[in-house]
Image (cartoon, rainbow, N blue to C red; front, side):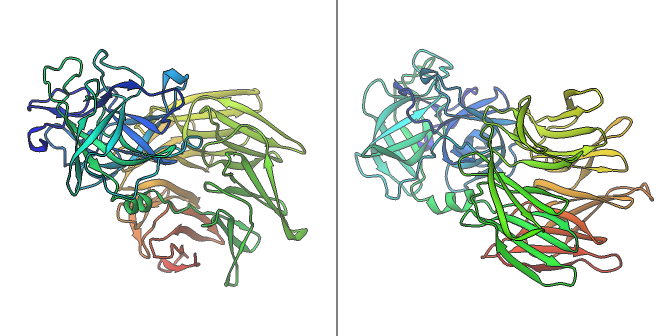
Length: 556
C-alpha cells in the first residue's frame, strides 16, 4: 500500500491513487482530553497537518508537511521555508483556543516521515505525551487523532479520533486498518498521533503518514487503510533534540566578571573571575526553568528568571551582606518565557511574556508593582533604557519586530511595528552613540539589523546564524555574535571610522550548543556559550586589542 499512496498535505490535491493523510474522522475528542494535540499550519493556508506536543517547546509531526509536492523526503533542517504556526490544545468543545506559536526550527528524520519542530515559546500548562518504549503488536488497537477533514466538514476546527488495528509492522512503519466504518484518515491528519492506552494514561507509538482517504468528504476512494511512521524507537533522538543547553548571562561588577546559568538540577549556577585571573564557581540555589537575565544596581547584583511554576523569580546579592543570596518571587502574572531587565532612573524594571501573550511589566522603586504593556508577542523580549524613554522589542505572531516605548515626558506608552523582514529568532538590542540598534535572525538564516536615530534604517548583515544573536558597542564599532549552522562562533562587526562593509569572521574554539552572551570588560571583548562537549562545558572566548582571539572553558 505504501508505494501506491501519494503523500499530500491538506490544501493540496494529489495526482496519485491516494493522498497523504491529514485528519482522523471518527468521534470528536472529548472536552479537556488529549490537550497535547497540535495543528500545524504551513504558509498560512498552503498546507495544514496535525502533530503532538512531546516537550514543552517541541511538537512531533510529519516531515512531509514541510515538503513540496513530490519531494516528501527533501526537507532540510533549520527554519521552515514558509512561515509556520503551531497551535497546541485547541478544542472548541472545551472552550480552549489553545496556544499558537511560530515555528523556529524543523528537525527532520531522513529515515521516516517524522520531524520535530521547535516553538517560539514553551507551552507550560499542557503535559506532553510520552513516547512508548515497546513495539506495536499484531492486531493491537490504537487510537489515531488529528485536525483534518471529516466526512462532513472540510475544515472542522476541532480534533477527532478513531480506532485502528495493526495489520503489519516494518522497521520504520506500521500498517493499520480502521476498527469501524466511521473511522477514516483524511487530509489534515498527517503527523497526528497514534496513541496506545496504558491504563488511564496514553503513550505515543507513531504518527499518521499516508492514507487512502476512504470516507473523507469529497473523496470517491473506498479504501480506509493507512500507514503510520513509528516513533517507539525514537525516544533517544527526541530526548537529545529537545534537551536544550541553557543560555548564559554575563555582566561585570567592579573588577569581577560574573556569569550565571541554569544548572542541570534547575538551580542558578554562578561563575566569577577576578581581574587577576582564576575562575570560581558556586550556586545561588533556587529553581530556574528558563534562562536568566540581570543587572548591577549599586552594591547589588540582581538576577531574574522564570520559575518552574511560571512565576518571576528574583535572586539578589548585596556586597554589604556578602555571606548570603536572597531569593524571592515577584508576584504578578505567570510568564511563559525568559525576562529582560534593566535599571532606569533608580528603578528596577523587568519585562516578560505573560500567559495571555501580552507584555507583562514589573517595577521596583521601594515597593513592587506590576502592569501590562499589552500587545501580543511570542518568544522573549529585549530592551534597554535611553534618556527619558524605556524601550522593549519582541516578535509578534506574524514574526514582525514590535517595539514598545514609554516616554516619561509625555507619560505615554506607544507600540509600533518596525518594518522589515520577518524574524526567526528573538531580538537583541543595545544603544550606540545615541542610536537604537536591534538584531535578529531572518527567515533565511542571515543576520538582520534595524536602527533608529533621527530616522529609521534597516539592512542585512549577511552570514548565517542559528538562534538569538548577542552584541555590544565597542568604541566606534558595533559587534554581534551568534551560533553558526555548524556550532561555530560567528562574529560580525562594523567600524564607523571606515564606513565600510560589515566584516564577518569565525572565532575559533569549541562548537557552541547554546546562544552566546557577549560583554565588554576592561576593554576586552568577552563571549560565553555552552559547548557541544560531552559535559556541556561553559566556553569562554575573549579578544584584547593587538592579540588574537583566545579561548578556554570554565567547566560545566
